[in-house]
Length: 494
Figure 1 (spheres, rainbow, N blue to C red):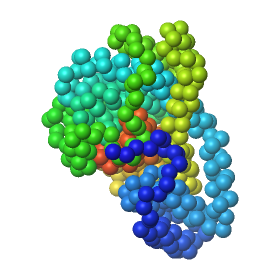
Figure 2: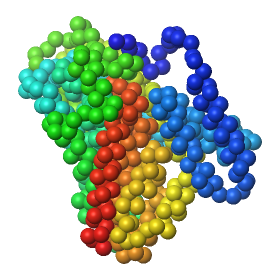
Figure 3: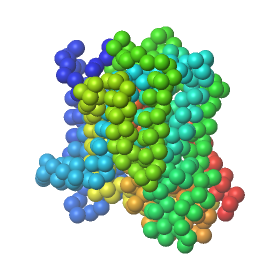
Figure 4: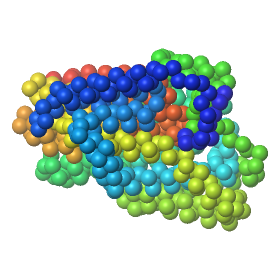
């Protein structure tokens, strides 16, 4: 079993390339050049606008490399946009993205969360919690159910869930031969799909304000959001599938079956994963109860502080980091230098997921300039009837979010389009909003370069593509069930 220290650790090639990737990239750019010549300057891009996202999918599936796939897709889109000066356009968009307040917030939150979790591990408190849980959890099924339960309990934010839940549970699930890919699937399924179902999450606060701003309701936006929760079908279906898997009532299939076979043969961590077995020889020795409290109390402070500051995870993680440093120094669990080194190590482990999310933002900006979202919505509008509207809204927006990786940004564009259509057709607004939020959570869950998926993989200790390929059959099943549900509700309620 081979591991690297971190995503950007220097390494030497183990074998010479076979030229397949070069041939793939050459073919892609030849196709892009042809499309650029085909497109008439100054006109809308139409169907060409979906090509960068398709290229990302093809390269990612062919190479299993997420960051490289995004970079190639983004560069392809830039060539289409500015064939004469795509380098200058790349520099402008990259600078604009890095100056984006959301990216700055994301870097600080994820970096500090990585450092916070590294402190818990370095002090031995994560292992203490795992040892304590092993006294309560006696079977593999119980380890899976407890992981899902913890994920549901940390509903306040999907980033917090994606990083905190696996930090608490991965050493325990390792003992029962659960693959890190299955752990990542459970964590990801209880991140965005659960956050949309709880009206005191970051998702609820954001989307309720968006609904109110765009005139979806004459009353408070949160009131409409709460009415829509029963119709957020993808969230309910996703947690149902997780419970079926955790209880053993749904068999493993697809790539997940191979991952589970490897884990039960004694290798829960996949080859090339950004995680290694912890060296516990140097971990501070404390009593199990004290070690457990030293893990749970900082976690409680993190959740409580985030809620106190109106569900602001950045302020919450700052408070939790300062509190944890003081708590561990008072008990002499670690020196100040050790804790600072842990925080820096935590930042470094988040470099790859942050790079993926940043390039994903670049791709989203390029897709916006190409008009991909508008093209897809306009293409489907002629087929809309009031009964089919919920299913069409779910499917079309699910494809858009999956292709862009932007579960929030896309809806700034789509809600002003979808809401007037629903009002004109006199469709039940809670049902339509339920379809929109279902699409958002599906896209966040299924897209291999979305922020919550990347963070779920990082937190669970596997590569983003290892996570994406093993969970995709399950999210596709969930999307199919959800579509049938919206078709049935569309005909019953209209």
